[in-house]
Amino acid sequence: LQHYFIQSNLRMRFNSSMGVALAFVALVQLTLARHHLEKETFEVSYDDDWAGVNKVEENVEEPPVLSKRWTTGMCTRAYPYAYQDGRYCCKYSYEKNSWKGNAGCDGGPISQESRCCYLNKYKKCAYNYCSSKQSNAGTKKILSDLTQKIEDKIKNFSSLASLKEFLEIGDNSLEIYQWEFVNKLVEKWQDLSLDDEMVSWIFNNRTIMEKIMTSGDVDGNLYNEALYIIAEIMRQDPSAKTGLKLDLAVAIGLTFSSEVPSLAYKTAIDGIARYHNFSRWADEGLFFEPFYSLNTWLMRYVVGSWATDEEMVWARDIIKANWTHFNNPNKINTVAVKMVKYTLFNDEGTSIHNGNFYYGLPATLEVLHKYGAVCGGISKFAVAMGQSFGIPGLPVGQPGHCAFMWLKNGAYWALGYNSGGWTKSVTHAPVMYSWKRASPFFPIMHEAQQKPDSYRLSERMRIIAQFVEPELRYELLEDATSVCPQNYDLYEDLRSVMSQHKVDEDTIENQLIPYLEDYYEAKFEIEEDVAVGELVSASEFPDHAWYVNDGTGS
Image (cartoon, rainbow, N blue to C red; front, side, top):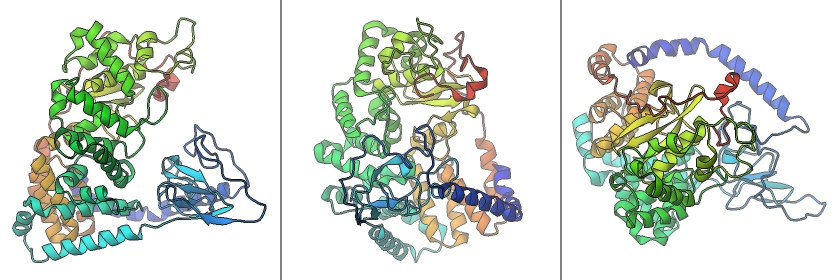
């Protein structure tokens, strides 16, 4: 981190000198991509990252039979954004970010020239040509109004002390959180409608907006989707407006703003139905005690389970009936290595890397328990068993291996079925994460969330820093690192400030580096060696160890 900050100016000079070369490479890539897209036809595989560009998914409604004459129309309200020369309509206003970097599929705003749609959520145009239904002009107006209100409130604060005093008052935070919410939508060309009474009520509720904006990041900045889900939950269950059920509703909204897949059935899990089941299970006392004191961020890694609700019922039943030794929050996740045998071949000699290893059965928890798995299935089984009892967890990728993280005893993040340690662990897609995919960021965020008042104040300071002059912006961000040193976004913003304006390196040495050096202790090597004595090879094919495929998606 010391080099990261102090040498930022050096890196900028290096990047500047590389500009011509990078531009040339980009031009070549763009030319090749355009040549590829201008061909009359091209094949698309469902296994390819471009899946869904020219193929229509099974759930896409067939367009009505049209006459031979040319017809034009508009996309629907549910799928309002036209792309691919008006032949398809996307649910979201921006493209998928293809790892191939193809033109028209790079995560930018969607347009007629775009070749793909975020999350492949599209419908075929019902006409020969479709235009977009709406724009986010109304959302930009909301952002503009909030910007003006905030600027009017802080225009007389010229010092760090006065501005910080203003931010420490909770009643001043609503418009700050609203601004950040809407700004994230505008960044991704998303729209926000406040016509719905419940949606508007939530948007103007400080407590709820604070939870939404300080409980971890959301894939694609789909905060509007999260808001709509939360509103629907509250319409169906008014008790979701307070207490544990409010945390549960917000966790569901944030997590299910993008689809949460069933591991076994490869279909999307119904988030609102999950809310009602978890709400009932909480009332019935079916979770371990730590669940009832989880914050919203931690609860996301319970409700986001890839196991279906029916599988979680099975998990609780079998533990209570046959595995009582593991019926506590300190051991529940370690039951996986006992309940799921490490198995490369089934009784008929079929490899686990063959799609028929489970005899055509979906890879439910019960099926994994019966027939076995390799590291991917074992780790995902472990995570689901904990989540069934309210313990947060998620699978993580390691070189040639799949391990898992869990909140051991509801107190701290630990690695399970581990072979690579924290430094070689990354969040398993499509689990949402904050800041960076590297797994050590989870313990860092956990520390931040343990002191919610400090973390939230540091976030307000970070957001307001965008409204003040560069000198005060640096002071504000630097002071915020003392308020909540675990808030990684502060350091990213500090880097940005220092790259745009000259900051005395002595200031950085005296203010930032001493703390960062003290903080860099070996805090994240908390490991649970549940794999000791067990075979943890990723595959019987070493050349393919980086692409583990055990029938459970790893």
